[in-house]
Image (cartoon, rainbow, N blue to C red):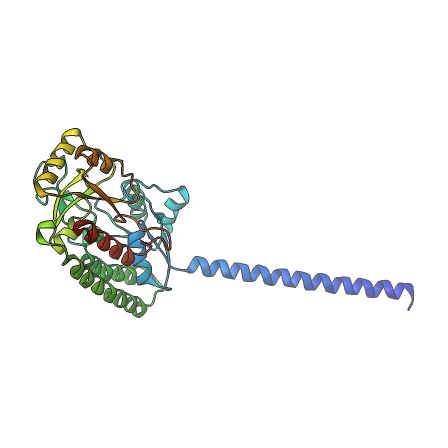
Length: 325
C-alpha cells in the first residue's frame, strides 16, 4: 500500500469515527430532552405540611409527583419556604394545605399560587372545624373562638378529608387515573377505620375520672371531642406555638390542674419543652412531661414517620401517661 493510499484510508476512518461520535451525541441529547419533557409533563401536587403530605402520597401513589414542603420534626406554625419552594407552589397542578391559620408563614405563598391560577384545597376548612378558646376571645372553649386547625388528631375527620383530597386530585390534576386514585383512597380509608377502632379501644383503658388533658398548646381538641376527653388547659393558651403565656395564665392553669388532679403534661417533641418544665416548677416538681408527635412527622424510622404510626405512638404515650401503666 502506498503512503498516499494509507493516508486516504486514515482520513476515511477518522471521518467515520467522527460521524459515529456525532450520532451518539445526538442520540444522547435526544434522550435527555425526551426525559426532561417526560419529567416536565408529570402531574405535580404540592402539599404544605408533612402530615397531610403523607396522606396525600398514599392517595396519589404513582399517579403524580407529590412534593411536601415541611421537613420532618418542623413546627408548622413557624416553618418558612425558600424561593425555590415558593416557585414550586405556583407551578403545581394542585396545592393541598391545612389552612385555618396553621401554616402562618406559608399561607401568603399559597394565596399567591391561587391568584396565579393554581387549584388549591384547604383540608382543615373541609373537616367540619371546631373552635378553641384563646386568650383573646375570652369565652369558654368551643364557643365563639378561633377555628382549630388540628383536625388530624381525629382519625374520622382525616378519613373524611382523604376522600375530599381524592376528589380534588381527580378534578384538577390532568393525566391521573381516577380509578387508581379512588382505589388508593379506599384502601387507605380502611387503615383509618382500623386506627379509629384501635384508638377507641386503647383509650377505653383510661378511667373516666382521668380523662383530662393538659398540653403544651391547644392541639388535641378534636381528639378530645372524638374520644371523650376534657381539655383542662394548655401551657401556651393558644392554638399556635408562636404565642407566649403570662404569669397569670400559668397560675390559672396550675389551679385547674390541682382541682382536676392532673399530673401529666403532653408536649410536642418538635417544640422546646421549657414552658412545660416551668409548669413543673410551679407545681413543685409533681408534674410529668410526656413527649408526643402531635404536629409533625419524624424522620424515617424515628417512630412517627407516617400519620398512622404517629397516631398510634401518641395514643400509646397518652394512655401510659394518664394511667401510669
